[in-house]
Structure formats: C-alpha cells, structure tokens
Image (cartoon, rainbow, N blue to C red):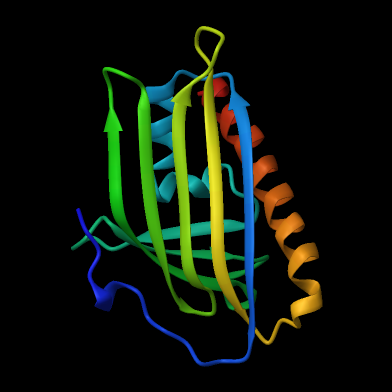
Length: 163
C-alpha cells in the first residue's frame, strides 16, 4: 500500500510540530499485539476517553474522538497508508496519516518480538502539527503524548489478558 499526495493534506495554519517516540515491552506475543494495535475500533477499549468510528466502506479510514464526551472531544481523522505484519518473523509496521481537522501529520508503530518468550517491543512515533500551539510548548506536549500512549499500551496489555 502506498500513499498518494492526496492522502496527506498540507496546512498553513499557525501552530507547531510536536514529535514524540516511545518504546515499550508488552507481555503479549507479536501477533496478538499487532492484532490489538490494528483493531482501530478496539482502541476505545484501552485508550482513555476515546471512541473510534471505522469507515464501513474503507476499513483503513477511521476517526478517533478523544475527550469526556463526543461534543467535547478532539476529532482525529486518520488513514492507515501502510500496514504490514510478517507472521513468520513477528515484525510489523503501520503508518497512519492524520488528516485533520485538528491534527495533521503521521503516526507510526512497529512491533518486534521481545527478548523474552511471549513479549513484544512496540515502538510508537508521532509527528503532528498542532494548531495555535506556541513552539516553546512542543517539548512538554510531546512528553505528555509519550506518557499518554505509554499508559495506553499498559492498558492494552491488561485488556488483552482479561479477555
């Protein structure tokens, strides 16, 4: 799957680019981890205050709503432009374009088998334009994003173990 220029809107709005990365070892095998990470609607089970609508006509397109209610939520439209998992090696990579209306940029995650049996290393990276964010705050917002997604991965593992 390759992206086309129309997959990724450009922006001239004021704001700043926020980038963060994190790596976590989860106590799940690579296939189960991959399945959970690419189950877009399932993110609502482990990402705090989030619901996800998947486009029934194109399951690569989905919108996450993060906030206490839909009316007070951040709308984050996305398109999975690359999604590949090799069951033989346990390695996978997914690239998601963030299409707005607020966040524009990309998120990427990879999964690789961990050093201990039944574990997986998840590496998550985001690079998004945040409108009206003063540039001195990008570091703080990036660190908060990494903490938020790190906690989400912990919840993902707990949800998987309880089901």
